Image (cartoon, rainbow, N blue to C red):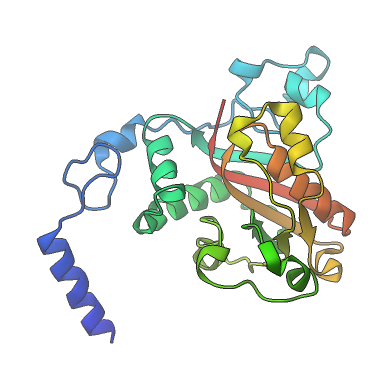
Length: 254
């Protein structure tokens, strides 16, 4: 079977050679060198808590020595730290949109490489017990899921859930699969910061609190904008007894 699979890949790439997902030029890995150069990693000039770029949000004057931003002074985040690979612009934005909305899952390898690079840069020295992500809405299976039932395959998975088995292997951290979404919500993109919090209130649930108690989590998503979704999941994990929740996203939005 592996031989047949390799032949199939060879035929596919010969007939339909890879095109850059951003600019459409011929390349080897669906992301050309020119577009890679346009990506802006966040680096270390960020808030030590939420990971926001300090040049955009500014330092809180009372916390300048430890690099805490003005946003964190007013937000009661349940997560411990948040980090992102790059700014949500140019190539990163195009890749995330195609992966998330158009279901171009052949871009999975690129997304994984961004997350792995950011994890090794920011979190490699941390003790993390499980990775988790933002799940799809369970719908009529919410009660079953909350009692330990399994997700159905197909459209019951979010685009980020599709990544988790392979990311677990890459990072050598077990995928907990312990978060479910029990309430249908409006699209966050259409709401302001305050409405996002209301929209998400109690929309997630930890299936097995014993599995979360005393553990550290790496919570994964594609884009950090206001952090409302990831903070609500972090809040539920903390209620279940989790120790620390570290956030990791592909990109940081404005």
